[in-house]
Image (tube, rainbow, N blue to C red; front, side, top):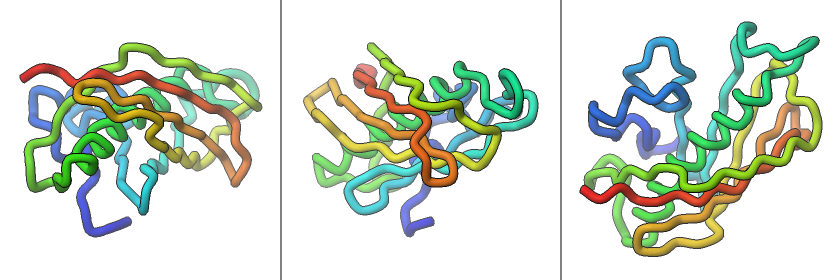
Length: 151
């Protein structure tokens, strides 16, 4: 996708177990988030067992994707703000303090595309807006407040 690794691939092993983004969770979604220009992107295709009704994705999966995309995005935006590079400096970890999701339309079980933009970047707090789309149609929007874990 680009020359930098996915931010989730730089998480230390003790933070790589998350259901949404943990590379070490064999049952999880293992999403990958990249910086592209001034935004973050994640592409993911839900599994058939992520189904709600009909051929639509379960709303909790949609929220999980927005949540984990946002935490990864917070790390990316925080590092970029400080002139740090993904995969070079240690990656900070963020946790969700607040997550709001607006379900705009049913999300199909199809390839999904998430785009994140920073709304606020502070010393420990980052606010990220994320749009989730399928086939170019936005099906959900989220806003997350993420807090950097003290290490």
